[in-house]
Amino acid sequence: MGSVRERLAHSPVTVSAPCRVDTGGTWDIKALALPLERQTPATVNMALTLRTAVTLRPCKEGRVKIFSRGFSHTEEASADRLPFHSPFGLFFAAVSYFGFHGLEVEIDSQSPVKSALGGSSTALVALLGALGALRKVGRDNRGLSRKELLHLAYHLEDGISGGNCGIQDQAAAVYGGAHLWKWHFGRPADPLTRIPLLDQKGLDALSNHMLVAYSGKSHVAAHTNRQWVNDFLSGKTRSGWIKANGAVHSFARAIQAGDWDRAAFFLREEMALRREITPEALDDVTEKMVTAAESVGCGGRFAGAGAGGSVWALGKGANMDKLRQEWQKLLAPIKDAQILDAGVDAEGVRLENFKTNKAL
Image 1 (spheres, rainbow, N blue to C red):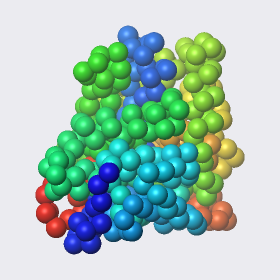
Image 2 (cartoon, helix red, strand yellow):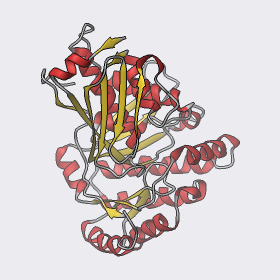
Image 3 (cartoon, rainbow, N blue to C red):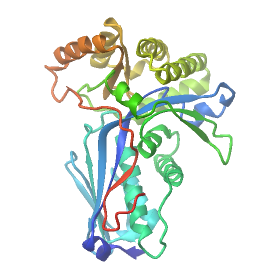
């Protein structure tokens, strides 16, 4: 175990990473992707300008302290007995991997708590980036490449959660931008293919044709994902999943071409299939939000595993203006519900503050 108290007293470390919206989520879970690898399972996600920052500061020798803005409690534990099963257990496990102590972890997210935008995975990526930057100036003198960071974040979260964890949240946080991800976990050295869909000009255009809103209801993904995986494994919903995967590939091609009307069409198509195979993903409010998007010619979809959380929409500019008005009326009476000030973030994980000023 190594104390980093003095290093952090000299210079705190801050690293940030973006959250995301997606279509084709859940295909990034091995239980779905591996048996049907011949179908080229895929997810499209877009990193958002809503970033989560993790700052490391000094703490007492032999102790690790973690707190997150938006949560009422703080956890602190002895470095030799870090609780991996607690609400902050995933982050304690990340610190344990590096063997550090004498540090305080502060998590500060620009997205609402439990909003289905991949917040916990984004925070983990930022934390691992900060810990890697700290290790880089220590005895190891070695940071983490983006590929290594994604590998570590995914396997750490999958292990601590007990399995059936996806990888797309971490992927968006590490790389940013708008990507088509192809999942082929059966290839040991090459488990995924990353395909950037747009350059900076295209990302700016996409930002002008997207809208993201929080429904006011927080969500917990574990139960919902478990139900979807079980239905897939039983064969009950498998054919629907295959059809939805085809819509995701078509959506990616439309985004790549900057054809927002066609992209909205395929987003509606995937959403129609998801209504059949994952009905739990929509509650009364998010169903109204998606329906409102479709009624003005846009496509709308729940983020992540849904069941509350956030909804995002895409379409032509004039249609998006109409939708903004409709969502504002719908969300106005709901506590904490809001249209989020979010565009597409071209950058993934990045070092914000450290005395070495070295990029990750």
